[in-house]
Length: 155
Image: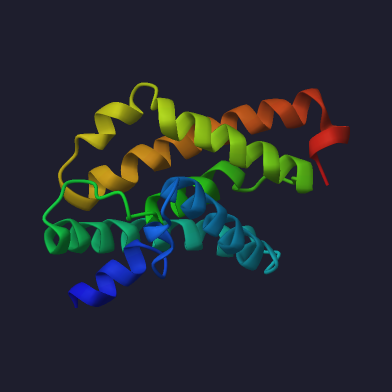
């Protein structure tokens, strides 16, 4: 079970990228986004986010125990969840997706309140919750961009 948990938490070992594993994990999140968005269903999109959040907490908890580390660097399922939340339910075009990617990475790195506090939660919940909050911030900023410049960022 530990091997499966590590495989899931690292998104098929993407998290072992030698540099910037969080950025690679966020890019993996874009692949999930495109796969989910092709369904055309907001319910599928929200269900996928909820499912990946739960699976992320489970797999990150297992990986923390397996690697004997708190919030191990190779865990990137949290970036996938955060990226999906950033783009959730927004009618973005390619530039909007790119903007969402950059915005999420900034919030993931700086972790404004309460994201940094969520990081202190126990186990996999802390690993995933701070990125989920960064995703909420990213979604709100992206909504603002869509309002201010829909011709640039909207489909």
